[in-house]
Amino acid sequence: RVLRNWANIDVLLQKRFDLFRNLQSVVDRSMDYEKELLTLISDARALDRPATGDTRELAQTLAGQDRLNQRLMAIREDYPQLKASEPVSRFMAIMADTETDISLVRGGYNDAVETYNARIQSFPDVILAKLFRFDVAEFGHWDPV
Image (tube, rainbow, N blue to C red; front, side, top):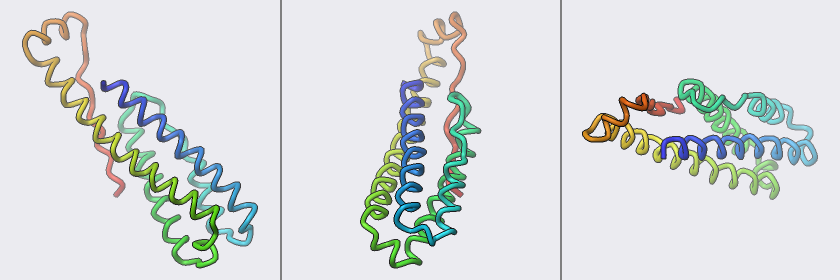
């Protein structure tokens, strides 16, 4: 379950990465005058997705992407033309849904880690855990702050 939930996080991060790329394409075509927004989206695309298995690297990437998302939402509110653009509004709704999904999967990952860690330290599972050298899994302590 831990590995499956980790894979789910990875899939959602790839989806978010692809959304940034598509949003940049839409904004390029419809609002090339908005340089600040284009720069922000380019910065978001430049954030590399972390290698699977490193929760600290994932936490840093998520925090950076969360800050960029907050700035993107603020820019959208500041510019009525951008807010009124249907393609941008549609992408922003999809991105908001993706952020919700990532938040839910984060919770699922931590729940799975908690269950896994408890089981490998409880009898009789501890015997197999020691025999097969199961390691304690790390919680995903990533806050958008």
